[in-house]
Image (cartoon, rainbow, N blue to C red; front, side):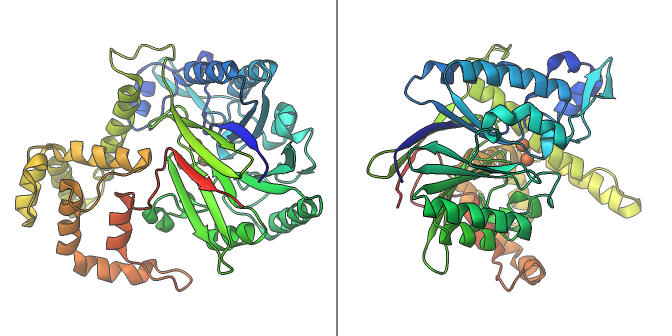
Length: 442
Ligand SMILES: [Fe+2]
Ligand SMILES: [Fe+2]
């Protein structure tokens, strides 16, 4: 690939605070939310101003979920920030996604949740036409996908699989044939192509292969299509996770999927990516910090992690609410145990040996720690760590359950090994980092 360099940030989930972000209903909502709503505008402003200062790189790419839930006012304010960044000399390329239109847009005022006006999908064209659409080589009106010449001999295929015009999270036949046409034209014009898409193409971690909305529909087919048509790199978001994955098609062609975290929630990263004249691609991950908000005396990273960690525990506890009769009773007991037990006590209950380094830890703290680590990338729980060994023993104890479940999860004849998937999700054994990595492209 010819030299190109750009900033990559995604899932900005920008919210216009004057719509309302306060009160009891807001506080209750935020208990379960991974990312910040009230602080999102300050975070975006701070990151944009840091990018504006960098005179080395003049391209900024944002693959979707620009606003919290498609509020019209959030779009208007976000566009003001985009225009400021553009005036600093940057070329900005975006795609929109499901959180940018027709969502159930809401805000919080006077202790209540209120409905607010959302943008329609069609309105997004006029709003964002100067951020990729207008000077595209080709634009697909139905999905707002496009292909743009972003450097000498380099085109960027922006795939919108989360539009109003096509099935959610899928590249349908019509979109696939439009992409084929664009890739053929690029080849004839002697251009290499990389792509962006809101949904990850390759599951970010092994267990996401089992989660419907965690990757594009028929991901193996789409990955092979891109790789076999010369697309070696795709930049994605949506899952709010830091990951880099490789896929090889049957013909031996590679696709690298770089999925980047939500900008306004833990792990709160963005990336700077550059490809040099020898086709060496360097991926650098940057922290979000220094934004104007009251962080209660903790570091920005801690502030983000606390929000997400507490939300993980709250969501797990939430699953143990409700039910009827005996189920309700069992759930209540389960919730009490989950919220109060230590890791060591749980081990004793299940006859599982636990290492002394985690024994005294509260189970809720361990669950939050593992959850945060999965979404941060470079998952540290490799063989030999207390967390890995405990989960390994736990999975062995319940292997009879896993063996019963696995055949039910099989799809298209692909065998499932839950133990391998779970252990692969808590440990990065890929041989490269999810944060800072180097690849030699074709
Ligand atoms: Fe998102
Ligand atoms: Fe999304």
